[in-house]
Image (cartoon, rainbow, N blue to C red; front, side):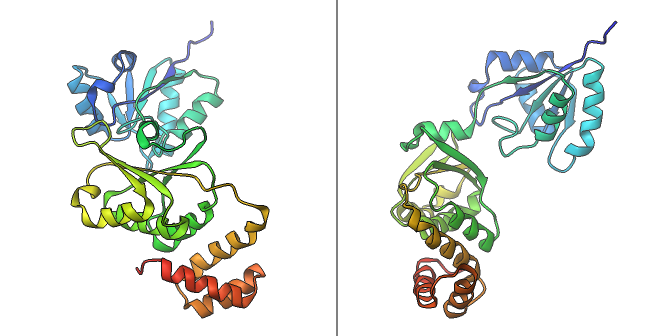
Length: 287
């Protein structure tokens, strides 16, 4: 007689407003024999608020690989396990991918219990095109890496969605303005679904300046939605490569030295590379 395996339910939880938890999500949490949570304290508070008490086990970026063995054994034995993150939909800038991949690879059921997500919430109210978009997660925290990534995304025509830490939002908007162009449209949504939900809309330059002057701008959870770039001609490809190369070199070298090295790496004319290095250096905030 075949042993009945368990199932893994991937459950979306509120990003702020408890009323956004679906009845199905509550039922799945109540029925779970074990809840794998990014932060057991936070999920424990959610369960208590819902009037539930379930066994909890931590599953985060630092222990996912080790925890999978234990969870797979329980699933093979027939356990029903719920996977949740701190807020929103698991796996979207949150742990859980490796667990889902391994459970699916063994042929055990993985079910989605959809619900809140800061990504779709921000897109729905940003006032920017939503037909095609790409989620980029967090931009790199390190200056050179962040500017390099922005240079790589400069010509992405789809709407871009980022998460950002409050203490980095001003400098990230400044780097985006320098890399994408000051006039590119953007919406910054903070504290989505919460009491102080606010959406700032304007150009990258406008919101970068506002982030420096408005103390409320850098409070709470932040999602950034940036309009995609206009479609470009094939002839723009060499310029994109030159800009991406200079964006890295200018963090360490003077414009003249950066231009000389960029010209060798990309095949651009040295004078053209120098003029572009000067433009980028003037447009990029120091630090």
